[in-house]
Image 1: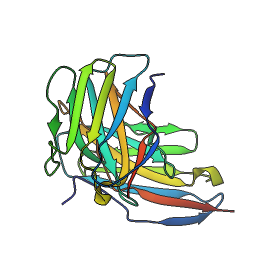
Image 2: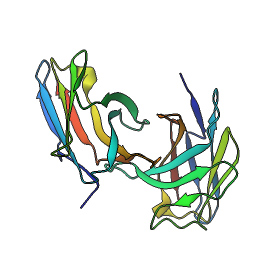
Image 3: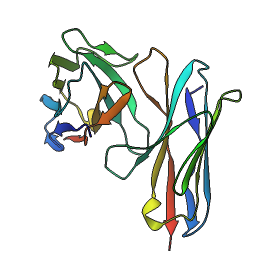
Length: 110
Length: 113
């Protein structure tokens, strides 16, 4: 089993739609959680960290459920510029490395 | 914010040759750097963790004699792909850690012909 698993995708949705991504992680010792965005042939860029209380940044909302080892990302009022691959990322206390999910490709259609 | 400079951004080399990729932290000291590899339509896979002044820690299945990592200073880590073959063609990305933040280089697209 992969340490971080995401929806396989791809997602193709119309502009303005709401999109939800899900992610599960297997290591219960995981302490930090993130969503990264990666555009084609580019490096990943941090979209937002994910906190237990849930957090929101504009049109983006992230949720963490430690009991279920589940992370989600919600994008509201999607824009064409949101088209990218979204990566779920975790790391464990004391472990320096980040573990990436396989990513979910999102395409927003006009 | 923190900046990590990675060079070259792309390289084409002949099979059997070696390629060196550099990763520099420009405005901070990075005691730890990470090297990832990403094949098309796949996610980033950690190859090794590089610690300044000590040997790198390689992930399972990564050949340390083929992927040589040097982290001789707090601002520079290098990855050398030795005797490259077409199957080594990939997108290589470095990342540096400062406190709890991770900053990525812009990546190197390696094509071995």
